Amino acid sequence: MEDVEPEQKIEEVVPEQKEEEDTTLLEKKENPYEELSKEEDKNPEPTGEVTFDFTSLPQHPMIPILLAASFFMNCVALIVPFMTTEIILKGTKTYNITSLIREMWTKGIYWPTILIVLFSVIFPFMKLGSLTYLFFKK
Image (tube, rainbow, N blue to C red; front, side, top):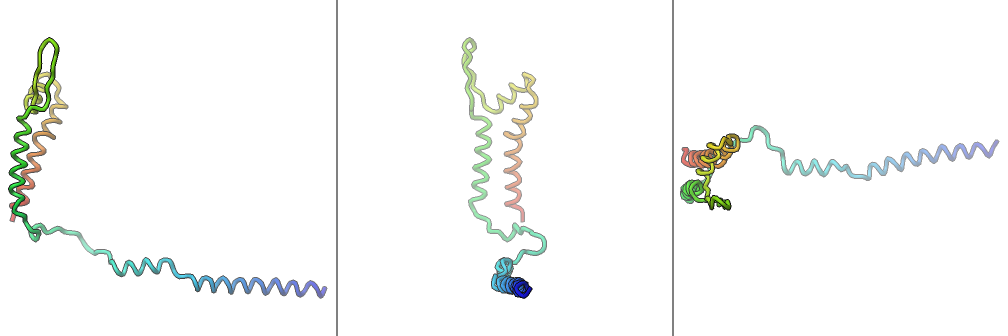
């Protein structure tokens, strides 16, 4: 019986020592979130609504020239031929965007024609018009 009591005492002492060691290890470890909080202090998150003030931006003098050049090139793209087909018995035929739109509409191909008109004719000029308006707006 005497031999049993010291073993019990040893088991009781060992868990207490482990708990002490565990707490010291936790105390020694640095908080991993502490570094993140330090970085957040350096770069605080913006508060409020984000707004853009286009009047304070510098207006480069080349922008109107580039807008005019873009308008000119869009007009030329509507006229310049971009596709040539060669049919054996009928010969060759050259298409530009306007003739392609006209021919597709007369053949009854409506949905692709509408998409071509929207994205090849209307959208580029609307985009240029809105950019020109934003540049010259005071």
